[in-house]
Image 1 (spheres, helix red, strand yellow):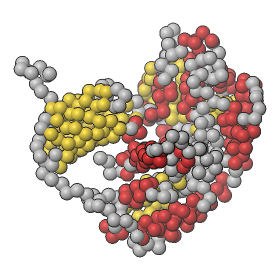
Image 2 (cartoon, rainbow, N blue to C red; image 1 turned 30 degrees about the vertical axis):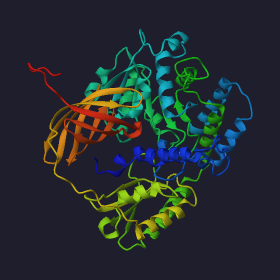
Image 3 (cartoon, rainbow, N blue to C red; image 1 turned 90 degrees about the horizontal axis):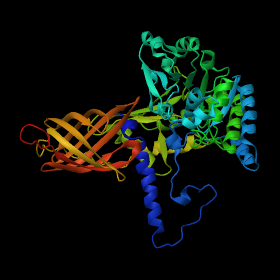
Image 4 (cartoon, rainbow, N blue to C red; image 1 turned 120 degrees about the horizontal axis):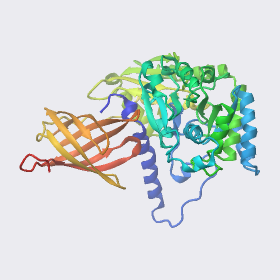
Length: 533
C-alpha cells in the first residue's frame, strides 16, 4: 500500500521473481526424469539448479548475498580448507594479526555481525565462567539487562535478546544514569546518525565506564575506520559484517575491541560447548576474513570511488539518449554505512510509457536480471518516475549491461496493462472481523476492525501479540488492505488481498520476507447480552 517501491517491491518480489520461478523451472524441468541433472561447477553453477543470478546495482544486502569476495579472499579460503589446525590457536593468531592491522586491542572473526552481537552479549554475562556459560539463556542470578537508546532499536537487536536479557530502553539523557543497575550486562548502540548525539557512543561510554559496563557498537554495513572511530569514542567493542564493504566471506563478521572480553566472546562460541555453539565459524571463513582485512588496508579506495563514478557516468549518458530522461549523481552527505555515489534517472512515465515501478520489475523479471537501488512512479497515481543505481557491489562489465538494458527499456518499453477500473463497493465491510490465517505450518486467529468511507478502508489489525493500523480499499467484491505492526525496533507487514462473499473474505496475505499465507475473515458475530462470541 506504500508509495515507496522498495517498501512494497523488496524481499517479497525477489522471493516471487527469483525463488518461486526457479522452483517452477526446477519442477518443470524434472518432470518425467528420474535423475536430476548434475551440478555444473562452472559459470552456470546456479543455473544448473534452476536459480537465476542477478546483477547487484543496489548495494550490500544479505537477501541478494551481500558482496562478492575479493580474489585474495577466495585464495585464502581455498588454502585454509587444505589443512587442519587447532581452532583456539588459530583464533589467537588471527586476533593478534587483526589487532596489528586495525590498531584495535584485539579482534576475532565470527559467523556474521549478528553472531558477534550474540557472542559479546554472552561474554558480558558469563565471561570465562563455564557454569554460567552452561546456564545461558537461563539468567537466574546473573546480569540480565541490556541498555539500548531508543534510536538504536532495530531488527538486529534480536541478536541481543536471544540470550534472554531484558531490554532497558532510554529515550533521553535524563533516563540514562537511572537505567544502570547491578543487573546491567552491557549497552548496545547501533552505529549511525544517532551515535554522535546526546545519547551517542561518547556520552553513554562516559557513564558506562564509571560503572564498569561494556559498550558495544553495531557497525555492520560501515566502512572500517583505522584507527577505529567507535573505539576512540569510548566503545568497548565494535562489530562489522564481513560480507559487506570489507568484501570478506558473506558468512563472516569482524569483532574488534577489548582483548579480555573478545577472548571471552570466543570461548562462548564454537568450537566450545556454550550458548554460541550453533553460531559456528569455520577455518575457511576465519582466514578469508583475515585476508579481507589485510586487503582493506591495501586497497586504493579513491580509485574504487572514481571507478564507481565512471560506471554511473556511462549508465547515465546512455539513459540520457532517451528524450526526456535526466540524471543526477549524488554523493553521501554523512554516515559510514554503505558509502557510495548514487545515480538517479528521472522521467515522465506518461510520456515514455513506462513507470519507475514497471522498469524496476521488468529489470528483475527479464534477462539479464538487475536489482536496482530504488524506484518510484506508478500507474493510476504518480507518473513522475525515477530509477536509482548504486555501483557499490557492481562488478567490472556490469555497467555496460545495466546501461544497455535501461536504455532499451526506456526507449522501447513493453506494453503494460492499465490498472483495473475501480468499481463501486459490492457491500459494506465496516465492522469487526475474525481473521484465521493459515501459514502452511501453523495458524493463528487475528482480529480486524474496519472503517469504510466509500472505497477507502482504515482500521486496526490485532495479532496474537502486537497490533497496528491498516489502510486499504474495496472495488466491487475485491478487498485489499495492508497493516504494519511495530515490533522491537522493526515492523511486521501484512498485505491482504481477498474476495468478499457474504460475511466472509477469502484470500491471501503477503508477509514480506516471511513468505505468504492464506486467510479467511469472518464478520464478527455478537451473542445476546452484548458479549462477543
